[in-house]
Length: 204
Image 1: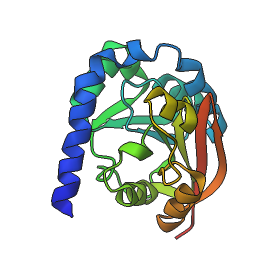
Image 2: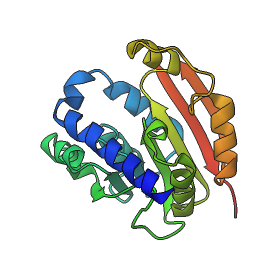
Image 3: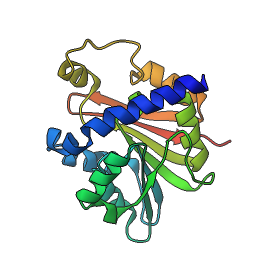
Image 4: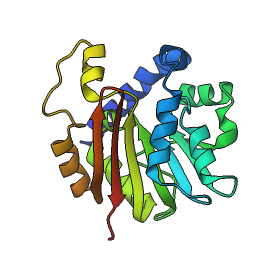
């Protein structure tokens, strides 16, 4: 199993390495959707938040704005080329960047108030392992936001695919997955112009 996950991890890294330099140009209008999603997490000044799979860092300025100068913002990504794009775009001033696998974070337990993950869940090799690791580093009653700037149907249409009922982002499957990994789904929105699932870390 570990070998398979390692291969999956390399495939994810290769996928994003190839696309990193063009990523922001492909999706130039997503900024307001990121800002709106961050606003729904309920972050407070002084909070510590992780952007898991931060990509080119489009959420980092909004996360910094939500937690203020006294808060902590981390941006973690598996792909060095994506983190290079964060720096190129000047978004590294909003966060401390980590080259890290979301399933093996170099963080102590219960150190975060929230995690933001844009497009994360469908790219997690072994999603249960990744979600359990995020639960480990988030304090009880902390938040997890799983976001995408378009909904499942719009994303499937963009890729020329049909919407499948066993999609990991479908509400019944996601709810079960979250329940099994230490989270409770609190709200779920799957609309043309956004996907946002908010979960709460359950007490141990």
